[in-house]
Image (cartoon, rainbow, N blue to C red; front, side):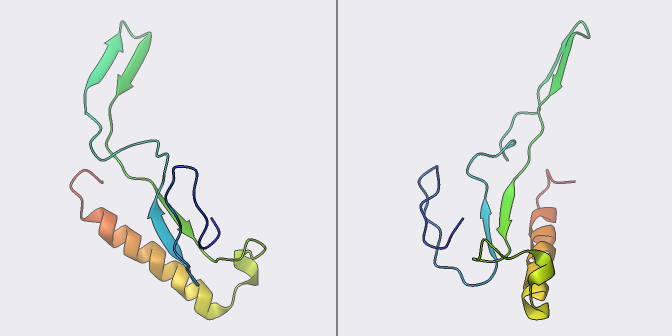
Length: 95
């Protein structure tokens, strides 16, 4: 997830200096997932569920953990989480 690196799916990270948020390249759920149900006599039960998976890089430094971050940098992480909560919460399929 280093700044400027090419990710596995081909996208290139920007030269970020603080937090960086992006849609997961290999998400477990997608916004356009059908909501179809399947129930094979109780043996195999499945239900489609739409969703979004995001990645939040808290720092461009790989050796840095949350406990070692400065207060201002921690604030940017919390602000990014709050922004994601607001942004994703506006989508009708997110509950």
